View 1: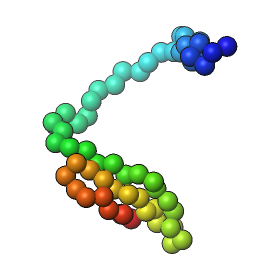
View 2: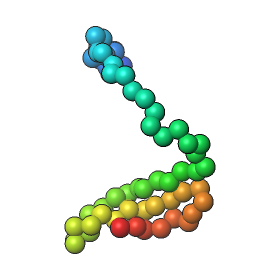
View 3: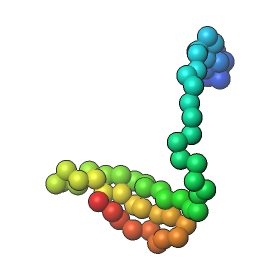
View 4: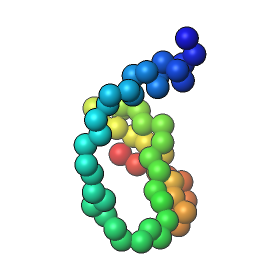
Length: 59
């Protein structure tokens, strides 16, 4: 069985719940947090990037 056929079979009879958009403000850009890693202290460190900012490591 092909994967897409398997997924379609799983979706049969699935009842979707209603949803509404919470944030309707127009978007000016985006921010991405990539490559999250645990630090020895237990913090998470990730690479933060966006349209209006230079890439930076953040904790």
